[in-house]
Picture 1: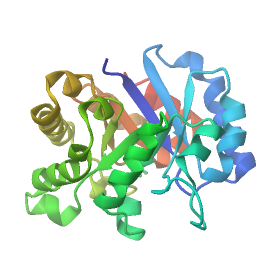
Picture 2 (picture 1 turned 180 degrees about the vertical axis):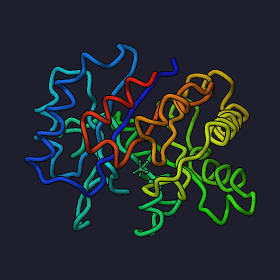
Picture 3 (picture 1 turned 135 degrees about the vertical axis):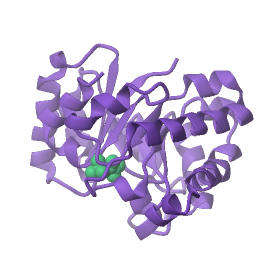
Picture 4 (picture 1 turned 90 degrees about the vertical axis):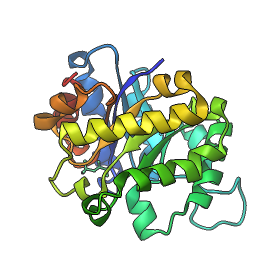
Length: 251
Ligand code: PEP
């Protein structure tokens, strides 16, 4: 079944104590969030175990921001999916544009990461989205379709059923610019169609597709009202519990 999801990507922000305190603030406000809205937080790796403890017993789920493309061994600096699982993660963000842009994340690597995460029972929040020049050249549909084909199409329908997609136009991430509800709805519907054409209507209908890119309390309502937008992947506004909860209340 398609689920409403509000996920917070903390990126490389907060120290462990600040992260635990933010997680506790989110948990303390959960009674303000509609029952059917699922909350996920994605702190840095160093915080996972402590944040898992802080959210224990609540409905907030834990996500990583990345994972290794190998199972274990001599890969200095990497974090394996089994480690994420043992830290309490049930999700991991994969293919975020910052990883694609600054760390050379390729579709080939992402296929490996997606498979490993899914095998470990961790649902990937798979990010796609075009750059500003691509949007201006009207290439956004092609770019997003290629990102989906290169990664998701390598997986089975059963695997894809456990994937959440986040559409994040790169020009809207951290810039204060947001896609209009019309722009976002148009491409979310397109993404659902690409998934439906390959994996069938049921997988596509059941898939949660989140919008990301300067989503905040003032614009979340309009975005979440769109038929094919099932919530948000939130960066900056997830660092303040009130804003993150206010976004979750926008449904
Ligand atoms: C993100 O990077 O996933 C994101 C959506 O960031 P922001 O909300 O800050 O634009």
